[in-house]
Image (cartoon, rainbow, N blue to C red):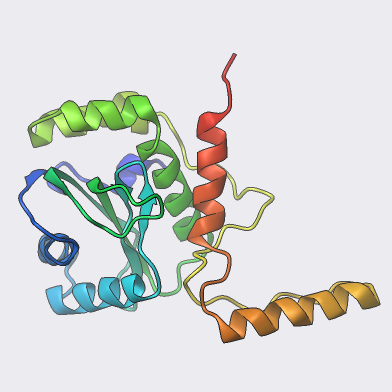
Length: 216
């Protein structure tokens, strides 16, 4: 799967005029509803519930609001460039001006996680982000995709688990050793008390490390 499979040319907002995070989510939900056949209210409520668990602002001026919808048939992406950066309560405290909305079917598994990680990695690449910020119309923004996005197929799931650290997850399997089993129980206990367990963060942190590694 390619990232361009997620975003159609009409799923790009080149100059989104908003003044707050709330308005960003409202505008994205409205546009997404027109394109994916879901109701604006359902999409907005899903995004808002996710944001209550922690901001999807991943740093470097990028946010990836996301969620799962029971009636959605496939992954859906929507990209927006903000005319003015807004406070998104991002991990690094920086305002956001590049937003990628990612919606997935409720039963989506690995594809959703792979897409989330790949979007985070690409949008935080300095060269890709610069090109997207320099574009002023939808055609120019979509033209960035063939050179920077379309050639980057979503890779196989990394050895390290990728989960949205604020989204529900299954309990981990016990280890084979006694010590391993006790460790697993303790980890699960913390996750049950605090929903902010290891997730988008694993994907985001992984993407940050890979984007900062030297290429030579």
